[in-house]
Length: 327
Image (tube, rainbow, N blue to C red; front, top):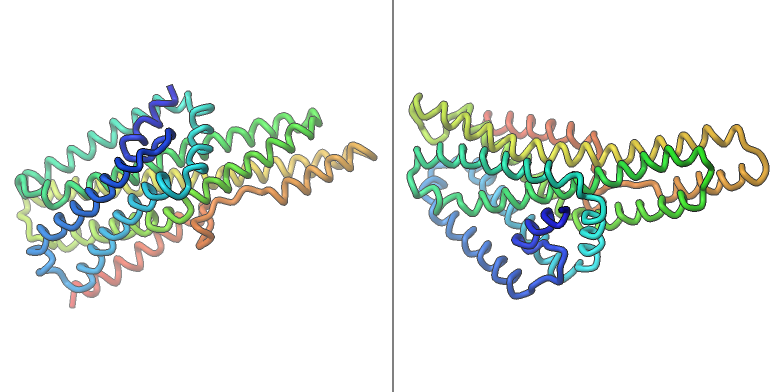
């Protein structure tokens, strides 16, 4: 059943099997050409934008495109071994997450179509020529955050199991598993670390852009149209923020569970003597040396503080944008 998750990835050229380099190359070229033309069709809108709003829109396009293309290229040409390891973990332990994964895809598609229908009502079929590529790129981000959430949940539950097992003092097996789990985290950082930077940037920029549209009514819609635009923008904000914040939260929980395991080992050490105490000392040292840390290419750590940094940056940027619009 867990192969269903990987099947979605294969369509996006992120699958676990030996990558089809021709398919991946065609997909990258298609995304490149369609991104160029979708922005070309939006030129009449861009001409009426303020400089800061224009820069914001261009940055969103660049970051969304960069996110998808980097993952495709890495999965096909650069980091194939790491992707194989990642998918093997998901396929072994991801069975119980299949239903929730499929439910998430259904919710995303339904909400996306509600948003699309609102825009079609405003723009007509021209919406597809201008924004269809953005919908595809947005789904790339959503799919990857779903995979990140599943992987983080699997690692978190493994640490919880180790915490229960440590009281039986079978330290050899626990220690080996501890090193393996840290290797999974390091593998995660190699695959997604650099991609997390454009993911977080895109998330913040989209929220600023859509909230600015809500406050300013940048496109001059009527009062009847404004309510539909409000709903469509809020849906897109949810599609960006909710999966990203959940991914960050579960990555943070991995660190918290690893910390609980370390604290429990330190607590048990007080009741041991001689050989058992030395074994536990070595285990504690190993735990500290192999403590899991999710990072975005070492630019920043992926933990709960990142949520507040994103919200703080969005608030600051939104204030700047509103001030520029007022002028």
